[in-house]
Image 1: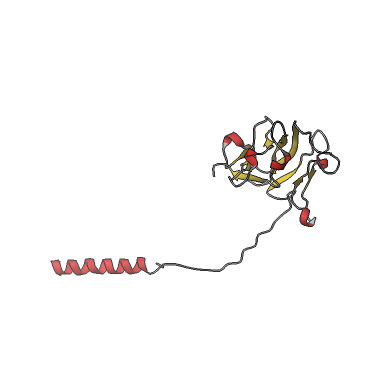
Image 2 (image 1 turned 60 degrees about the vertical axis):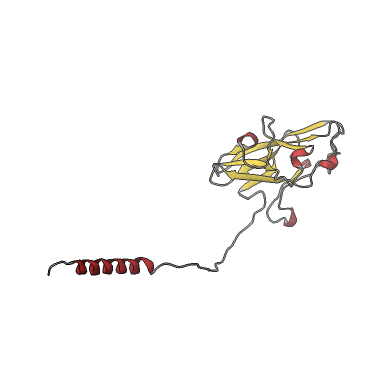
Length: 189
């Protein structure tokens, strides 16, 4: 059979039609599917980011830090309380540092950057309260930035965090927020 223009056009049309049918049969505009999700929480002593009173603190960390422990109900998150219990509070018109009071530990499997988040709605950055690394650099920031983070290696890498209260000048203890946000993000994200 000789190839003429009509046979070639019919052959090409058949190829295009069969190719479109083969590729177009799996296409869809949208899909909605319900799936079960289970998320477990853990106390600060067993979470991916462990936050606790530093076991090697120069004083007694438990005088200022209540470690969050599993099975303890509402006290499963770490709390910092300066001026309660064994201590009588910090001095007025003074700079008070609790060097290495806290320890943060990366129990995850990837390197993470730790910082204390001030997202703009918090008054932490302008308060007399600061959290610092072992070199005295503030860890307070709005996002991960190498100038305000401490690097936590995976699988148990930890770092000491100092708590600093600066009540010099016009600073008042009333300016200290009631809570802070500790944040850790995987490096490179």
